[in-house]
Image (tube, rainbow over all chains, first blue to last red; front, side, top):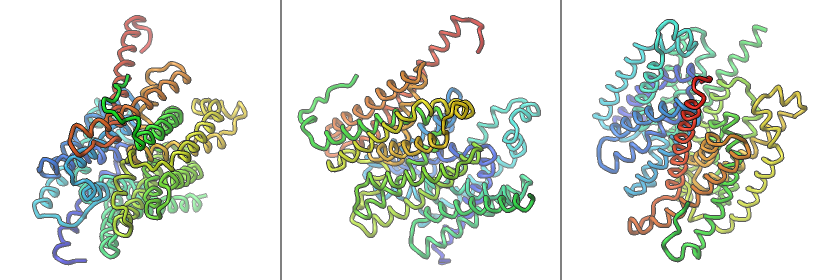
Length: 265
Length: 295
């Protein structure tokens, strides 16, 4: 399990988990579960297009994530976010399917792209992911306070900071960046499980926002490590364990807060 | 509205006839159930239900069962579970939906892995997730039609009470409507609709058929009945149009047809964009006419 060829997988997964856990905190605070699910799926044709024309997968993912941010924010201006996200994700999945079917690498790559693939990660990939993660975390750190204020009370943020429309953009951009990094590892369908599960559990462990962010990132790392270890031992897909452990995080958080309420009452 | 297929043999082709029949049933049911789903702001729940039903579909391929039964069983079980959990807080409901969605998709990953390694159904992943209308076995048609009729009857029975409780829960209770029974029935109708859509365009694209025509129709229509009719038209047009285009596409790129689901989803998205353009132009015109009277 700790053979040299697994080293890159462990490192990459750790970085991805740290970013997903931190961004996930804001996803939960901003009630953005559906966009967080739609963006990775919107990136899916990017990976397919990249494999069709032979450029870096990460580049394809990043371009389509950016496109997803544009489309969702354009559509949600007129319609509610739900419908915009739903239609965008269906359209992009269909486009990705078309690209893969035209490139003739259909069935093999579909599983990896949708459900994750941790093996065979090159050094260059690791470096570029590390750089992008640093960028995402840096922007997140710069905007963390206004973002949190805006998530808790939009009116308060508008009063204190003036324009808050730009914050939604920044948030979607960070979400897109962390998505592009995470898709190759845990798969387009399950990225958001990694964001939502640990972050929702973290709320039950502390009332302080920054501590909750830390708990969320830590839980996310634990989730990914366990998922990879279990996948290695059983030879089953990583996505299965990420999905189930994310749900386990949520359930344990709910149980804990239910217990706390019962004690207080 | 729809160009007649230029190739002979379109109507004589058995898989095409099966696809047209099942597709029509799915489009009809999805349009009707979708209107209620969009109005009740349950797009995410509908999407989650569709995605999760893929676990049932892949289990059916593994066991050699009728895939529609698999989709249906899983969708109904999860719909029941989410209704049972009954969380009022919208934010918590979104989170729970997301978590269920994640766990269900994880299960799908495992079952598809088994499909590929244990069974002989290596194409199951594509068929379950993205649909393959032209390979639907004709034996499914009676079951599909029965499911469609059941969903339509259920929707008709709860049509008025659901409309009232979508507008205001208190109003519904004051009128003596049993809200719990109504929402449970709607959840089951949603499960039926989603499983038909999953059979047609695939589990992870089913959202488009469920939400798209309804959302487009609701933008244009002024009355609920009008919205229903329009949604049915858009859904049917997109589904049949998609089948025709996919049939034609066998001749565009020799030897390889383009996927049906791609055309259906694209047509639905185009209809949605068109409707939102038309309705925003209408609103601008009306605003100009009544100059200054409200926003």
